[in-house]
Image (cartoon, rainbow, N blue to C red; front, side, top):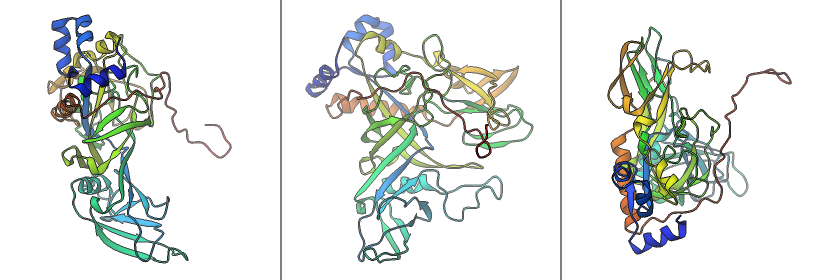
Length: 398
């Protein structure tokens, strides 16, 4: 058994043994679980892909004269101003003002909140336009200026739902193409798309949330952030395989970090034709090897992680429960699979190579003593269900 303090002392002294989740599989095969658990201190996990439930709090400072901002747009993308005088929250999926959306289907969705966040992190100039009703102490009613992230007092990324533990594989069983947040799906099961780093993904290496919890330090697009809560739609009471790994969505994480410390390579606005805009993020999470069962979980292989194949033309939009089959990430990464005797082309919305790069960066930061581990002060719930929204009349039953 090891403790967080013992591991952190080794990190500070430069003696910690750190491997990525990709490297550790072969290492344990060679050394054996007992010997490897005594040697390895940290395993780094990572993921990179669209994470729609993301955004940021921004503080502009006070203009002269002062202004109580009640409406705000950044490069014509609306930000929520129902907070304090010069604080706003910019959501990654917010569309640009007057975007035609899907009025001319499928819409292009060329620019939105995720793209503004990308520009800010990259140090680019963004237009701020703000309105107010005016008050005695905040008399200014209209403001237009140009800012960069360096002009902001704070730019704090605050993401309610990131790092899905597992996720659907999307397919289209209808006879016409459809456009989804998992990309374009061709008719008659000609292709499918998925979005996970599989054996590199953080919560798939900690399936029962033994080390990742509220307060855990994370590498958020280059910044040193942390988990501030369970993510929205957290659903740990899910179907799991014999290895304990969920075979459906399951856990999520709410993450926060300082945008001023982020690397633009890992913060990218995303346009999803026919669906909307989003933000692709890179996240890395270190797992302390406190005992051999934690290490065993970190040796999970793509071949051992199954994801449900869901028809996004009917079952998904109607909140149905039917699945066509389950496929492993090893199968999905081969580029094509067979379903019901049909060859189906596979494609990923996430980048395994980017995730691997993040795991390596985090490994080096830990080795150099620049990233310490933090013990969660609150564990994630182990048996929590996700409740649906049932449409019902006032005072009536669903």
